[in-house]
Image 1 (cartoon, one colour):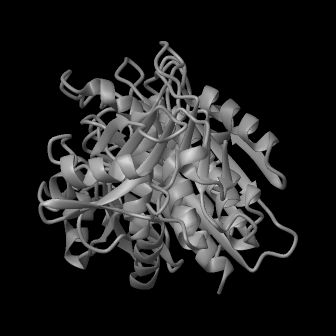
Image 2: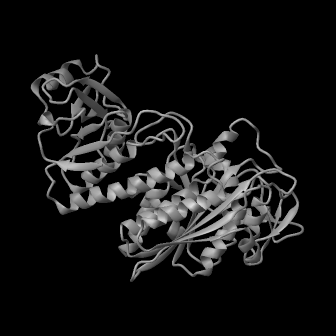
Image 3: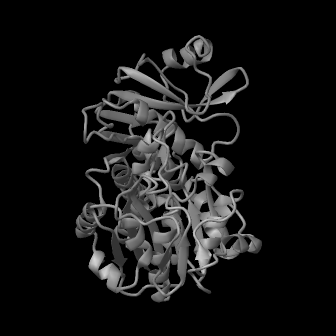
Length: 486
């Protein structure tokens, strides 16, 4: 939990007090540090270099709490240049992440207005995450006191309340991504969606199982899921406020484990394919968060859930399937399965005539080739794509706009069906987007490819842990909030 306080940080009885410092050439500059006791002020001015304190981004150092009630002062870097909300978000998150195991922490970072309060609160909460379902580890920081003179400011209080809802949605998304695939399969995911909706006013969940999917013509989900003993599901999660000002549909890829099917993946690295449902996880908890924030926008999430396994019943390269709505697809590679389940979800979403559709998926390895592990891609209708980029920038996530060249459609030609599920090797991320575009018609739409950023196999950084990151939730919520303000 997090609370606001205007007390002198030096007098707070907590496990640690956190101070931000910026990099200034060969020196460091403490920020919002008028309260700092003289002993600590001298220490930072004279001995910062000896203590390894440079003010760099992601740098967290501990020094004795000289003159503090707390035993430790934690110094967190914001880097050089302007101190942006994202710099504060990352600095606060890096500190609470490094302080795992502490029960109480005070954050004395710049928080002079509601924007800074929001950034510090959100970063601290995002960093205070631990996944301990399968083994005991250090628990996340339990309580955070955010030092600010805005304790009675309604905007600051609202910012903290929003930060708690956003962080809870991101944490819940991370939890799903981190869950082992023997525990998280399509039916289990559907049950968790129902449980998540119980605590959110105005949210309803409906589930289509294998029989309903077959009778409804959802050939993508049926085809991808037929190789598994645990059948596919299409979960619809709907938030309906009383007088919506807009309608937004979200479609999420939910491959609970992706072996590649008959076109099986190499064994090395396959364990990370439990994260191939990160898009569906983000969609589920975005809808729940929108309800908890009581946004005046109707939001419908479509979770396209299947397990892609090789077996005697699995779909084969050269199979032809029929997507909901009637388009046929020749399956040339069973490891290009995400676009097949997403096609079904997109058609279902468009049938309800929303104002706009966003889909989010760990869709292509080509995304990582193009943009690496921290920057996601967005493509689609130019105006919607730009809205997503603006929402990402406002919320602190990194999405890069990409094109959808019309000529790539020719590479998806099939001799026997309307489309093939793969095209040329080069530009694979864009080709996948072009494939999905065939299923949205004239509906305003954007496709978010989060293949790399959704699962962090490298070192933790800022407020981002190892494992599931929860990427996309903040951008989707920011997009919906912007639509609410139109």
